[in-house]
Length: 424
Image 1 (cartoon, rainbow, N blue to C red):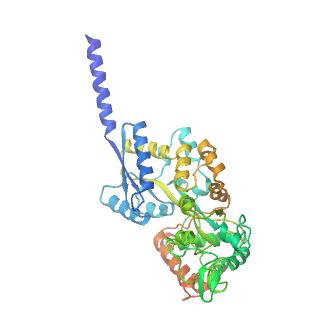
Image 2 (image 1 turned 60 degrees about the horizontal axis):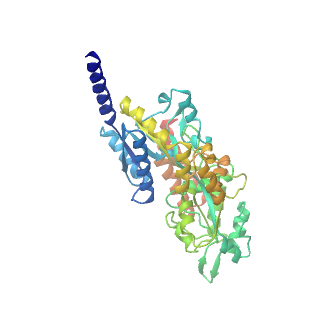
Image 3 (image 1 turned 135 degrees about the vertical axis):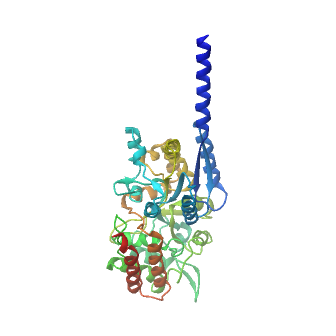
């Protein structure tokens, strides 16, 4: 009866193996403040992944805004119970490295297929994902800034409803025709470029078009006081104070789409991540275009990457890389882009039947992708939160009129230099 005892032994081993595999649970921090379509989509992905990988469980933890999620993830890490996987801003890369909280993906990518996967993403998105010859983040929900316009408003102003302003001069000329005034009251502004939430990011839409980058690749230097940076800020200030085609003072990031829907502005700049929202809620035909050029064209990239936190067991590391690879297949990247408006992060996603059909029916979905050839890395440095705050404070001082653009940028650069001195 040796064959019987052998079979029993094999069955016990199989059961033990299954039990061990079932013990692999990945905690997954995801940045969203409230429930809704996004959480349903993520929950759906997690359930589908678990069906295909029965030995792995995904525990999705919805941790609030990006900033909330970063703070909670680092707090959990320092307390000895870090997340296994998290989606955090691509610009958090240096902060996470400095905190020694995350591991690079490279040691986990051994096969040729693994290495090919790591090279399958758009190079523009990898600029905020790699440093020091290592890959620290994998692109997931990534974006660029695009320009939306109300075609009905263009037609009413005598403008071609199918042509967006292509350069800085045209943006001013169009804005003057689109701004509706009754004495001192303005019922419709020509353009709104938000200046709260992520002012530095919107500002990069101007500096990139003016042919200048705000920092070096190592995240140890910034160039806020360059003449071309000051010139870009002067243009932004002039849109409201000189040309009077944009509201003065600060413009709220969160309410800009609402202003657009309510016809309070004919043009807005915001993330392509708002594309699905605009498609669902704009009560008029609208267009989407790349940002206007000046000495060049371009936008910063933005959005979130997958990160792997340290202190994982070997089994969890293997499960985590499997999960991240599964979440970024061409089919999933295409589906995520269609459902959210984020840019599908790899070129082959755009060759899937689903995304091909979506673009054929809704060509605006391809604008952010096409802009990637002109895109640059989003502002990211060591001690990034403090450096970014220095720039944001300077931008708002200039927009509010308490400092000249030149003084604002010189002060911001001085503060950034002080913060980064120890990282040089």
